[in-house]
Image (cartoon, rainbow, N blue to C red):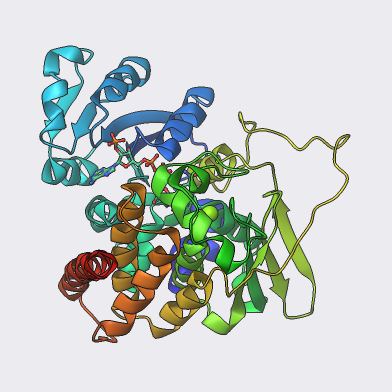
Length: 416
Ligand code: NDP
Ligand code: MG
């Protein structure tokens, strides 16, 4: 039986024993790590619309102290964490409402996340930087609404195992995984799955041939056609690395063999995933591209309640379209499937190399096609460990970051 089935979709949870039901005990108290990001802001908006359901107990940002101060004034959490110790100079205890505690640094955040005062943590930090707070929350037995896919790519097997051991639930926030989660609510549904098919918009370069991608600019890559998101995931969407990360994420969350995972391009971003069942029936989850729905579902699960998310306009609706991904122009997709198949340290290496590559592309020192090329070569060069412990994964992450920098420096030297 899958780890996720055990931690997320078990019969006991669906029989009303969940601590997620709208309860007589008052609103659910949540901590949002990464509250200053796109997901964090959407999450606070959902909470503001559902005060009888959700209460914000804590928030964290890395550097955006101005926004943290505004969020603290509006949502009145018990604590605010700033993880960048330099940027923390921009926020003083006296800037926060009375009774709201200011803490600084990654360790302080991990302690707050694991501490009392909330039952669920929204993991919305970008990148591997989200691992520690997600881990701390699960270790303390808190449920986690997980947007931070990089943590699952890096350490999916261990994170799922930890959640199971601590009897903590992992609730997907990524729209595709939320769609699958919504489609698999019936007890035993996961055991009747033939295939999970994730959709993707295709990003800003959909339809372009590989040779047309060589000189694309950062500005063009950031112009996503359907979603407004942080810069890192927006570049991942342009290379289709985001879909690769999501296939790996699905592999762990749903404990699905890789040959039962697929991706299809759906430019309108309205259908978020399909489940094909063993009898040939295919069901889909559809809603306008608005992250407030998957966030809300994770926070109110197993209930559905009215919320602020955009609605489908049935009078304007005429068609939804699909196409096959261009695997030559976007080799990240097949790389992701290979890495999902390999497991072990492969995900940590892929993720770390990609984080460096995206950072370098955004800084103007790496070409678009070299993002995936760099990741392919770093993954190819690594010594695979099939059953790593958390420390081995951290080491693999560190090795891949160094290797990625070396690769990029070599490219620059060769070009000069
Ligand atoms: P953003 O870039 O908008 O926000 C990132 C958040 O992480 C900010 O709060 C930022 O703080 C914080 N942060 C950045 N670096 C660190 C660090 N080293 N330590 C602690 N905190 C840090 O990203 P998104 O909101 O777009 O994405 C967040 C996560 O959710 C990603 O993993 C992404 O893949 C995933 N996701 C996002 C979706 C979306 O629609 N945006 C959809 C599905 C998944 P600050 O800004 O204060 O510096
Ligand atoms: Mg997604």
